[in-house]
Length: 302
Image 1 (cartoon, rainbow, N blue to C red):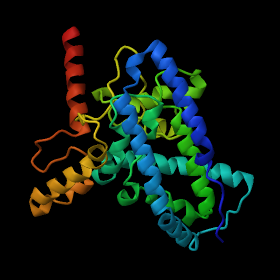
Image 2: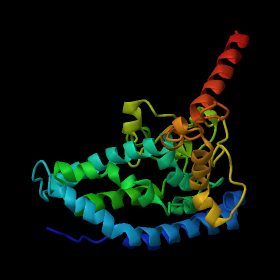
Image 3: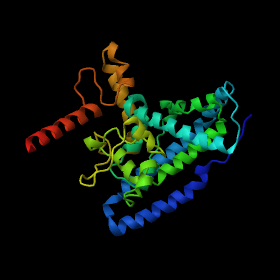
Image 4: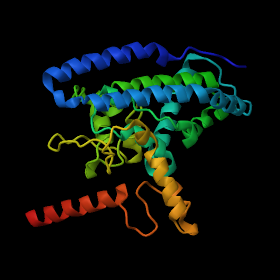
């Protein structure tokens, strides 16, 4: 049975706009460098384009989820506990997606859009991809409908997760009480995730609950002694919206075209930065070199 629930994001948009305006006022008074007009306009372009792309593909995604629901293992229904279970499992599914989006280049080609800003403010949260459908990111939530959660419930919980993640894109908030920081994703944890500092690469994939990172060994705490550098390892160097959206897809096409046949698939499914001749850096190699330097520094200090 098709059920249509309201989309919580529609109601949250005015709040998003208000929060961005408030943060802009705060930044103007306390840290003007936190906002760059061209960067913010690019983020708004991302947000508008992703909204249009989502609307165009929503029907196809919904059809696939309702198809999967026909083959559900159990009938879960709409009880209060089902909503809680759905939200928690959906957040775990998001963690798996998010980790894959940083470790598999095909998924990264879409997700890189979100990381392309060298600033970290609430407008950065609007940098959502136009190509999520092409990247097949929705497949990570499909297991929930096969389990027995209704597609409408899954979509609703996913929207709540997205809303939660909006407010953590800020430098205006430093830390929350320790118990909250231990369980929930916070601005501090997510700043680490957006960092290009070697110590922070591939950390803190959480959506709502940071406990997934603690459980699966991908957690990193923010170090107040080291300034965070935002963006991607190879910065775009432009505010051109179309280039920002499609640059990684173009790079993949060039790599696949020029690579020897036995390595072509590697440029789709290996980590970002992988090359068949080892001439490029992945996050693993960058982090390994950094760890080696740290160990040498400790040895010399002794």
